[in-house]
Length: 235
Image (tube, rainbow, N blue to C red; front, top):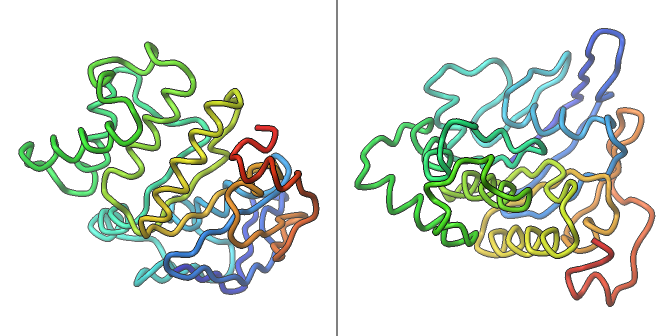
C-alpha cells in the first residue's frame, strides 16, 4: 500500500528524513513515535503528496512518485483520510459543511449521496446534533471528532492521524483512540504519528521510532499493560 524507497527530505539545511526505506501493507496498523519536529508530519505529508521528497520515491497504491495531476489528487483523496494535528476545519463552515467538503473535493457533488454519508459519519463520532454549529462553537474534543468524521466520511482504505490526541483531556483522548481503533477493525489501515508512548501502547500494531531523520522498527518505553488494555494508559 505504501512504499518509501531511499527517501530523503530536506528543508533548506534541515534534514527531516534521511534515506528512509519502509513499507506499510494494506489493512495494517502502525505508530510512528518521535519528539516534536522529528519529521512525523513530513512523513505523512509525503504519503498524501502534499510535499515531494528531495530524493527517493514514495509509492501509495498505484500512485508512484512525482507531482500528481488534479484528477489523480482527487483519486488519492478518496483512498486516504487525514486527521491533522491542527484540525484544519474551515471556521466559516458548519460541522456538516466541513465534513461534506471531503466528499466534494473527491468529486462527489450530488446532495442525495453527500447528505446521508455526512450524517452517517457524524453519528459515528457523536456529532449529529452539532451539524449546524461552527467550529468555534465546539469544544476542543468535539473539533477533533469533527476532523475524524471528515477523514472517514469517504470510507478510505488508509487513515493518517497526526498527533490525534494532542492537548485532549484523558477521557476525550481515550474516546478518540477507541474510535480510530474501531475504524481500523472495520478494514482501514491506520498510521498514527505521536510523541506519546502511552498512545502507541493503546493503538498497538507495528511501532517505529523516528529519530535524527531515520525510521526504525521498535521503540523503547511502555506503560502498564492494565492501563493500555483499559484504553487510558495515562492519557
